[in-house]
Length: 92
Image (cartoon, rainbow, N blue to C red; front, side, top):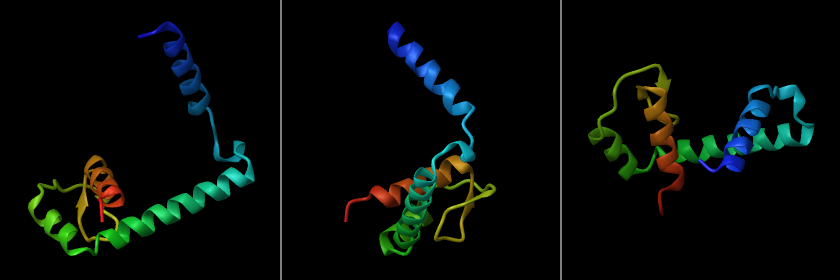
């Protein structure tokens, strides 16, 4: 990896790993909460679409501890994130 890039990534990772919620300005905290609320609303609404319901039925989904928002499906965290993200970026 390019040395300046590697150094920058390590510096950023170190900073982020020590970051706490209280370190963030109130405006950043509020924006973060709004973005997550919007994201979960879109994901839950997308889960109600007929094509997504069909996709959940046919796409292998291992059981696990993480819910897929807007459904009754419990799966692994990785699969939940992938399926949820898919709904939020799927073309209309």
